[in-house]
Length: 255
Ligand code: 3PY
Ligand code: MG
Image (cartoon, rainbow, N blue to C red; front, side):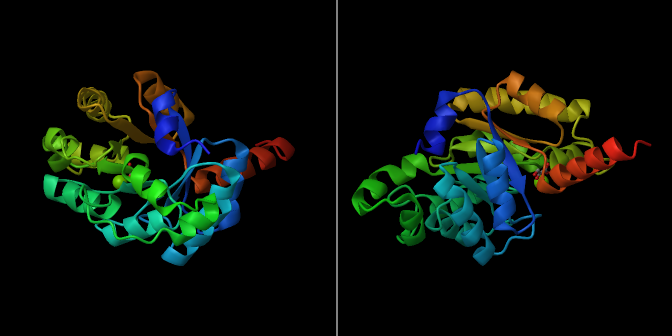
């Protein structure tokens, strides 16, 4: 199966589903529905480590890359997610070079990082049997997305992007909009947030890394892809369910 890294390199703006309800069948359904990849959210979603293991087991055999967003600062889980078959990890609240380096340590094997060997479950899911072939390509193919969602992160963006092993950034427009508004509002489409999305993309391009972002609505996803974002999360499972239910009910029982 084509790696997440090679799919990103192919361009076009990958669309990932965003699954917070800890049900492997839901992750699988999103892969089957046509998303390019599937992200399991442990930060604000309800997945625990065992659920992530089962969720990845439902997605990876379908030939779709899977990613995990780990809880804040839980870099041990980043390594475990890779061991379980995730190809990418999104780490929230990476605000400094020190945060970025700790994330890389968990994501990459030596000498770049300090990831410990143990991808047994990943091998079972992908059919990989050659440990050294995996070792040779893992640091290149496992994608470390550092979330940029605070003023501190914006100020340190160039330095975070310069950390070897950080493959890209993933913008969190909700948190970033709150901090840009000094706590006054959460508004993913505020002018300050939209400017930040453009500025971040310029910095990421200059660094030669990947740019990802979260979009709550299709309109936002269309705009971010048009801007040139490489990886766009479109909505969440709760939104998919709510929209599907209200569309069905409205069709039968118009307001
Ligand atoms: C944010 O918008 O803050 C996010 O973390 C998106 O998932
Ligand atoms: Mg956030």
